[in-house]
Amino acid sequence: MECVFGMVGKGFALVVADTSAVNSILVHKSNEDKIMILDSHKLMGASGEAGDRAQFTEYVQKNVSLYQFRNGIPLTTKAAANFMRGELATALRKNPYMVNIVLAGYDKETGPSLYFIDYIATLHKVDKAAFGYGSYFSLAMMDRHYHPDMTVEEAIKLAEQCIEEIRSRLVVAPQNFVIKIVDKDGAREHSWRRTTKD
Image 1 (cartoon, rainbow, N blue to C red):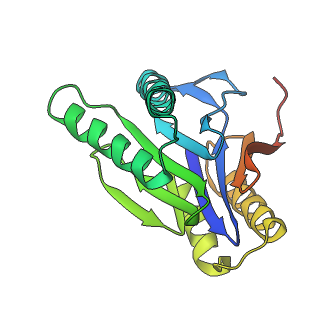
Image 2: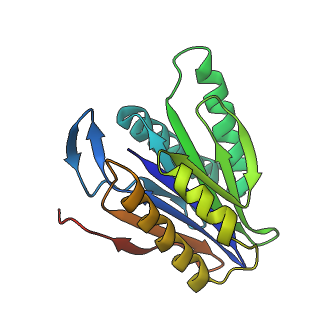
């Protein structure tokens, strides 16, 4: 029962993900960080099959680093999103990755941005996005309470409302969540919301 969601506020973007690693009816871990820091100003929240998620996110992270190493400049968030979309589209005809991505980034020229990329290589720039069973509730909460000029405090409060809604409404709800933020100061972990210990 995975859940990854994100939103863009005034000068920042935020990504939230559950931290459970599950298979069928078994919970293997409750501290799996599904939000990868791609570089100093990009976050990638991923949901999907555990093997595909780990392989694809690490592949993207290493290629983004390789691009910066070779060219001396980092990819923009838009360029990174298009690179991911291209890789998923190529794999779709061969050996598809069952992975959905919420990419958040901050660029000096364009500010914060959020991209929705699904397993069939659909790419959209959005203000808010969600994947997984929790998306039914988090998207409903964001539709009602989100506005583009949110402060960090307002966005964190909305993320917490989404988490509470997911915990109370899903039959088998993930218990722990991680929240990460990217803004002009870079990508960083903001906090964990735990109800179970590791």
